[in-house]
Amino acid sequence: MDALELLTQRVSIAKLTDPAPDAGQRETFFRAALRAPDHGLLRPWRFLTVEGSARDALGDLFAKALEAGEEPPKPEAVEKARRNPLRAPLIVVVIARVLKHPKVPALEQRLAAGCAAHGILQAAYAMGIGAIWRSGPLAYDPIVAEGLGLAEYEECLGFLYMGTPDKEPRTAPQLSIADFVSGWRG
Image (cartoon, rainbow, N blue to C red; front, side, top):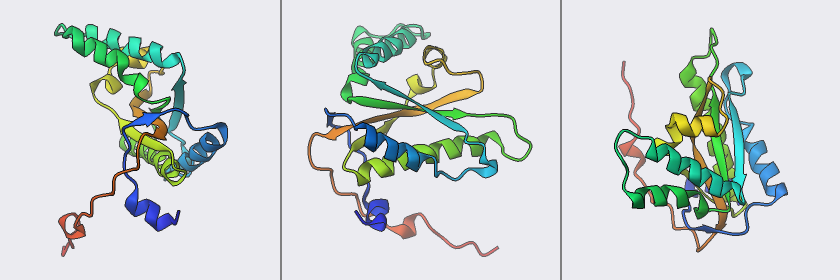
């Protein structure tokens, strides 16, 4: 796939099935992550892979976090949270490692980790791997963070659900650049 075609045509793919990306594919997409812009060369990211029965454990963790909320959840919401990790054969947890630094603010460190995750998505699409970045309240929940073993200075930015596309990817919408770009005249 041509690099510019990849950059302009990548789409999220939600319907995923087995097989999960193999070891060689994982090596490639994690290498792509390591090329993210990184002010200060802090490498403010790390990733966890969740697959097999660990997806059930992640679902249990999601359910536990939902049940611990201020409002009692509906049973169907708990069951949905429990099943969410089963929607793909591989989940990559995106973690920002936010450290105090005199020249690199926390926001830049989070953005660098987000760019690393985007590198994974781009490389996956180039290899024909389906992927979608999912977040939401459970991604930022302290019970989930603790269950995943995150350090005090780490934050979950979301979950990359990855696998084999269940069908052909949709065509990327053609957006008007003028809706998003304008000149600044000072």
